[in-house]
Length: 227
Image (cartoon, rainbow, N blue to C red; front, side, top):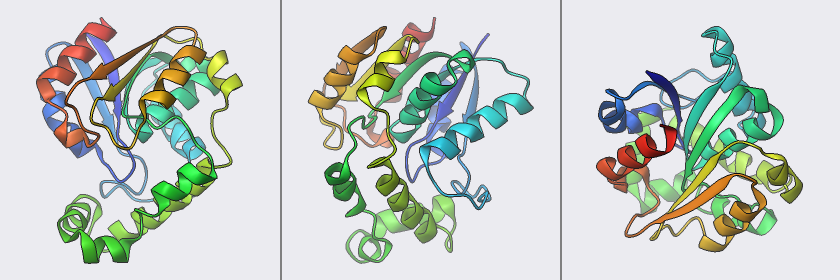
């Protein structure tokens, strides 16, 4: 069977892919990774940034003697996949991103950072805070959120530029939910036209959170794209 790695988004973990893994298990050998510090995986004590997370994927591949791998990346995981395609093109096969924010500058980063204050989240959205505590650990989730805010700040200055997207040769599917309020149609369409071998698909009625993406829809799209 074909091998496929699943990369989670910011504040996420591989546990969010459990139902998707089951749905894909007859067609693929699935590998779901936790980035360090996420999902109770110990932190490597390095900063959260796209370069470090990309190197974690490479390290995992090297440990498992994999030269190349296809990637489904949700949100930030999709950005990590595109970063790998740009700077380590011989290690990446086809890429399917979903809900991946592709436009980064100081204004965009600041918009995201405003939502990443642990104390405000605890006060205003306690159910979400509890979800994060269960996912990352009661004493770790605030650190994960604070480090993610720094990742966003880093992306304002260290991100894929137009010329980077133009150099990516891989076959890419850029997926976006029609109700995604974090990732705009314009930014996704713009990058679609920069990439040499890409398709852009909008999924009507689909919101940004991975938990709100229908598993039958997503598994069907993954099977069609990677086969």
